[in-house]
Image (cartoon, rainbow, N blue to C red; front, side, top):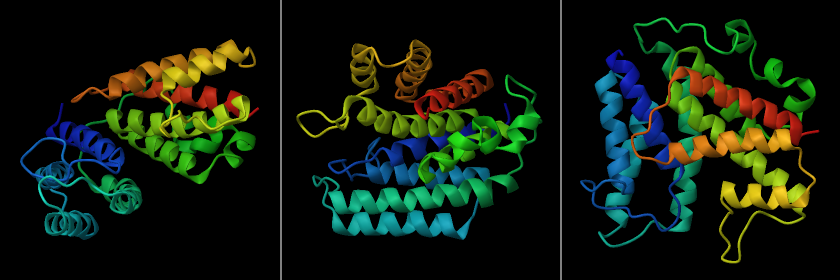
Amino acid sequence: MPQNYSMLFYLGYLYKILQDIKAGSAVKPKSTKWTVLWVLNQFKKRLNWIGINDPTITKFVNKWEKFLSKNYRGDQLLNELHAKRLSDELTALWEHFVNEVLWDIPLYAEVTSGLINPDLLRKGLRELLGSDVYDNLPIEVKLDLEDAIKVIRIGVWTPAVMMTLRAVEASLRKYYEKIMGKPPIDEKGKFLTWYQMLNDLRSTGKVKTTLIGYLDFLRDRRNEADHPGKRFEQEIAERTLIHAVEALKIMKT
């Protein structure tokens, strides 16, 4: 596997870690794994190793490293306002990375045809979902799935799986609220896990077994994605997208 591929896999993993950062996350020190500063530092290092010197990305990382180093002591945890700002800016940054930066990275390899017809991938998300489903998806779900398709086309499998799973998770929470008549939140105000949501949905008898099957597959991939260093191959990336598309079609009917 070319070096750029492995670095891009790791960038996708670090992006997921950053995206999952919430209020209460440890900020310092930079040398300790999984603190906010450590992940930002690793993100910057991997970009440099690939040879990406994009000013927008550099400005983002440098700004947050400087801000967090100045405003947090070693024992302080990230507050809610800063966590939201970081998440919002990171979402915009990743869109810029996928749409404007990624295409210029030399990958030194052709992506072979997989489970999904390449012509169908080139036509995009609307073609995969159908116009009725596509037009009713929230914009953030569309963006994640469109980005997943783009990176599948150039062979970056791990970020594709992570973006697909995030899109499905957002849709599943809305679907849960529609079926159960309440948001997927426990008594402590935390979101229910996939396991909890699927158990509740099964118990109603209102949900098609085919949908539960698709979601069970995706839940398993979600659990795998939580393991540090997990990497996905082409077949799983495409199968994850296929299951996501079919699940979304049923949830929107």
